[in-house]
Amino acid sequence: MVRSLRFVAALVLLGSIGGCEPAPVAIPPGAQQVAVAVSATTVTLTPSAVPAGDVYLVLAFPAGGPGEVWLVRSGTGGLSDAQLAQLAQTGDAGQGILQESMSASCCGNVVKKTLVAGKYAIILPGPEGSASVVPPISTAILEVNP
Image (cartoon, rainbow, N blue to C red; front, side):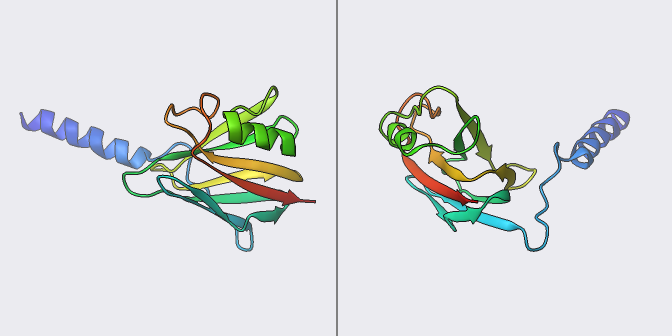
């Protein structure tokens, strides 16, 4: 019995040492950061405009609330105004659109993205849990300047 308890304890210890894959994202000093604040009904960005390049999105979710947002962009970068309007109305911005889930986990709450100039949507998905199924609950626009 003692031997099996030691074995279980060793497995638990190895699991906690193994930690998180991938490792948490470290923000270098002076790096561009955007705070992504999420509530049950809204997503807001501070600041809402940044220069192109590496952007560190710092996610803040409420306890017991929604645990993910989506970054929506085109295959080449930002979205057009028409695509943004369509996304807000239908939850679908058209063909060639990429939707990337972002959530906080044991690995941290920072997501690094390299963004080119354009407009990007960060959405709180609708009740179906997929940005392409129903209009989003809330949409925030990140404007990336050249």
